[in-house]
Amino acid sequence: MAKRDNISSSVIRRLPRYYRFLRELDSRGVTHVSSGELARRMRSTASQVRQDLNCFGEFGQQGIGYNVSMLRDVIEDILGIKCMYPAILIGAGNIGHAIANQVMFEGRCFELIGIFDKDPDKIGSDVGGLVIQNVDQLESFCRSHYVTTAILCVPKAAVEPIAETLYESGVRSFWNFSHYDLNMKFDNVIVENVHISDSLMQLCFRLKKTNSD
Image (cartoon, rainbow, N blue to C red; front, top):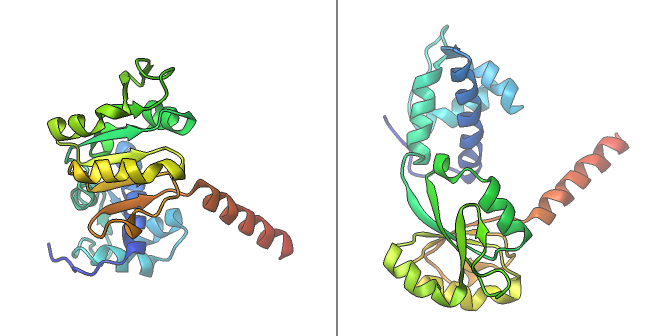
């Protein structure tokens, strides 16, 4: 399978949606799907779908379309979903609770193995089947469990010392809800920033645009 090295971030952002749609089709027993049908579901164009998938190889057949189960497996492999990376969550507040209880980590190549907080009223309680530990134990836990990924659900002001501890403990990837720009502090980390307020403002923009049309 030929691959390009310079895959754009916009293509990568679309891959999970392709994967989700293909899993749904496969569960319904659909064996083949056209680029046009995928485009309809993606609210895109057939040309865009073909360009996206051609970044990773030639999969479709003219007049037949894409083999659903094969393409699902290919995208699963591209995304690395079958890998398993040990992850921890720091900050057992409302967002942390929601992530620990509702995100299906097992199906997305991560295993949540620890939750940490500094609040003595939270330490020792159970969230998502895990006991909240004192953040003071963060470094020793990361080193002994070879943690690769940290989910940051703490206030922006609290991130820097925690991020430094995590970095010194070998953690190099972050799912960041804190609004603190980790790339400004560390050059060689992988960060997926989640700005819920930004998403809400985008929704506001789309509503305004619809109402003004």
